[in-house]
Length: 175
Image 1: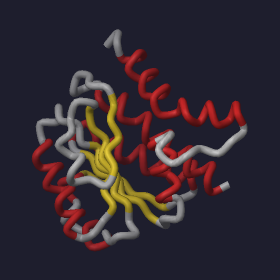
Image 2: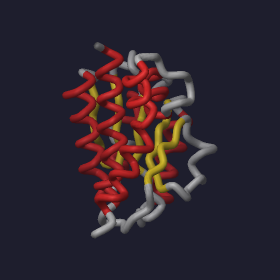
Image 3: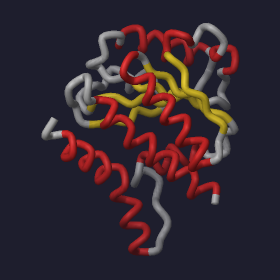
């Protein structure tokens, strides 16, 4: 528990360092300088997002969707990943980004991977959030956002930060 503030600070510094540099130098970012900015720029014109999570990560999916609505003014819905087959899957196409909170420490990790593969089968753009040392998703997701590893129960605190930053960056891009 004592290490959580450091892990959150690590995520903030890693993902927003390029933005601070860009603000200070008053220049635009180059592609690849900030992964979240690139991700936001690629998806800023999307009209809808789906956020998926299981167990402890379902409320994070809901929070991510809410931040997307509040900050970026983009329609977004959060769903339990297990319920994806009961409606939301019909909406997924190449214009519907799907953000999946998929830490390897989640007991349902293999089921989450299965959800990602279902999204890919519908040509959806899949964005995963997982631990730094998990590279299993690199091949099956369009984007993978890595966060520091922590205890399973505390992982939602760390995975929320990139979702908030992504919403902020898309909000900036949308004006």
